[in-house]
Image (cartoon, rainbow, N blue to C red; front, side, top):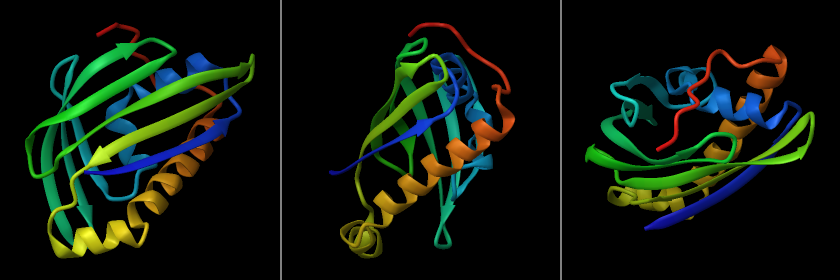
Length: 149
């Protein structure tokens, strides 16, 4: 398994950053390679991704969700094997640190080489930068799910 850890500070309150992150179906707006996410239940999402021409579909289960603190997941079916957690850290009333930690299993030679060359790390960093722009430009979340898992 490979690992990636990235973080970014966003200029919104912790509840705004957290609330937006729980809107999984908006991820294609700021995550490169994510074509579609369907929220099937409170804890099950279906992902369709396409990275470098390789299309994957998989289901991910939310294993822990604590409002304004963390969202953790693991894949349970499909073409990808990964698990991770996103944590939200209040810096002050108007700033939040968003930290993403993920483990994933590269599939095949091309993905293994891409991982060794830092592709996943760069993509994760870019996704977090696009999340920052997305939420800061809006100034408010598109929705919220405040349940706990």
